[in-house]
Length: 106
Image 1: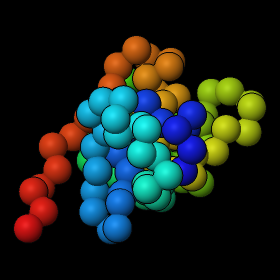
Image 2: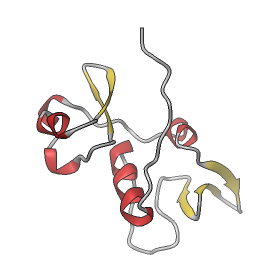
Image 3: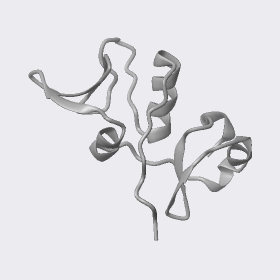
Image 4: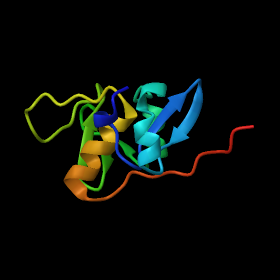
C-alpha cells in the first residue's frame, strides 16, 4: 500500500494479522501492509445496520451504502473496495471515526 492512502485509525493487515494504525510510524510502513476487503461483516463491526428499502442498504447515522458497496445519496459512483477507504471517507464527511473492539488474536 501507499502511505498516502492511510491515516491514523485505519485497519489493515500485515502477514495475515489485523493491524490498527496508531501513529505516523505505522503509516511510514505502509509498504508492509495489505488492504482489507470490505465485507458485510466489517460493516456490522463498525455498527452499520442492514435495512431493506427495496434493496439492501447498510445504514449508520445518515451514511448509506448499498448492497454493492456504493455510497448512496450522491451520484459520483463512489464504490468502497477496502475497509480503509470507507474509514477515510466516513471520517471526512462526519468528522467521526468508525470504531470497533476486535477480539484479541492468539
